[in-house]
View 1: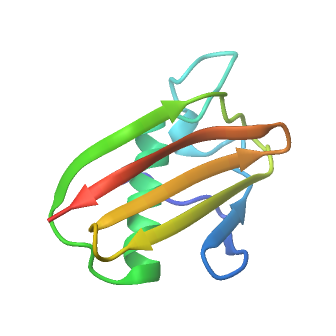
View 2: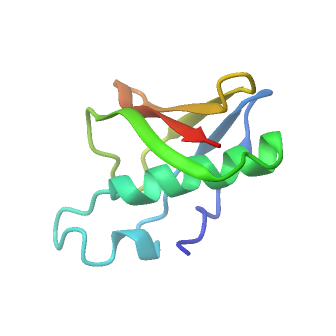
Length: 110
């Protein structure tokens, strides 16, 4: 399990703010000389933080409308917004930087 950034902090009722430190293990090998935060790490963090924020989400079923629009680089200020729809059993997540949306999607649960 890839650890959360050391700077991770709540930002409002359904958001987190952070900067991923340059020496964070998520950047190891992804990619030399041009590190970017892997998409799989972004999805993992969103689901884990969603479970912390909203409680047990259920058994994971699928990812929907997953879009990676811009890279997340070391030390970049990022806000992760989460929204839980209990009726749909769906966690929406959006990563934003100063220049706009970085990635977004929906995780569905049973």
